[in-house]
Image (cartoon, rainbow, N blue to C red; front, side, top):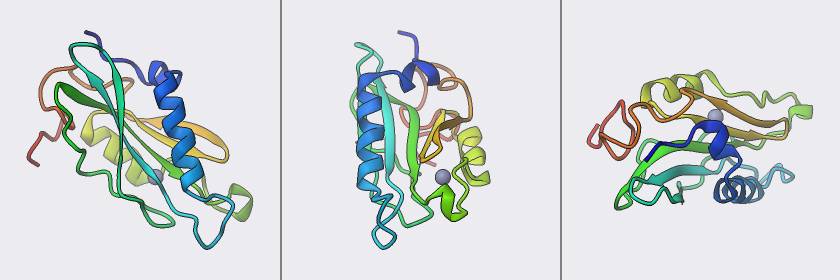
Length: 143
Ligand SMILES: [Zn+2]
């Protein structure tokens, strides 16, 4: 079973729905309620099925994605989170330096959803395929 690439994941209906739900739940149009949302994308190593788990809601400019939930027979193949603050208001929608760093050290693509579109940083697909630690391949299951 080959691990899906970032571009394959971005076109997957389960992932498209997860990005849309995270964006809506971020309240991008409400300056008081606006906050980051996100989670993890998993691939089942036997069936190839894609599943999603949401993280706890973040704050207006951050979210913790350090501790993916475990799902039987599944590996984390990417993370995603929103940057809901408006580009027109002077906010930068791009992946932050921390996003880029975290994508490199975890070994999976990191998607960022913003009002300027969807960005992805890190490797083109999960490093090492659907083997090794079920969570982040370069960190392990018990960091
Ligand atoms: Zn970010």
